[in-house]
Image 1: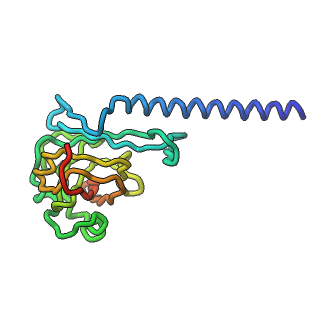
Image 2 (image 1 turned 90 degrees about the vertical axis):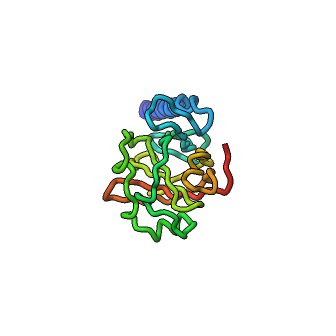
Image 3 (image 1 turned 135 degrees about the vertical axis):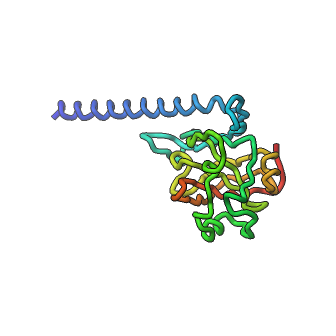
Length: 208
């Protein structure tokens, strides 16, 4: 009986230590990645047309491949890069629509109305991080992604911190501002061309 109890106790301790080592390693991996980030904007040189990058941080405790948001820490860091040249989006997506709530747009617009920038422009695109910005009107911005993994949860784009877009790019697109408040935003998926269009509300005014 004593031997059985001792064996069970040793097995439990072994499993606990193994899980603890795994958790510490996962945290160290994410922290080492996030140490390079000084803010959420990064100018990239030597990357062709992809000149401005942003970091999307998912906060929480990563354990066994899952993120537990109720704990402090960083689960993952995703980078998105937009081109340093602006294309007229009106030939590709709906423009200047009279709807100013992202969730109303999600309900009312046909996903097939969202064409693919990737199919229209002659730029090498890495779907893991390259996105195209667009504006549906002065209050609504959008980001067109070409990969779902990592960026969205349950078909929703989550921002846990404010996203400050490039001021000049936002002005060229006709937006009233360049700050997207933290929150959750709908994603319109066009399955025919493989695009994921995050619909974002921008605040009035420009920050640098």
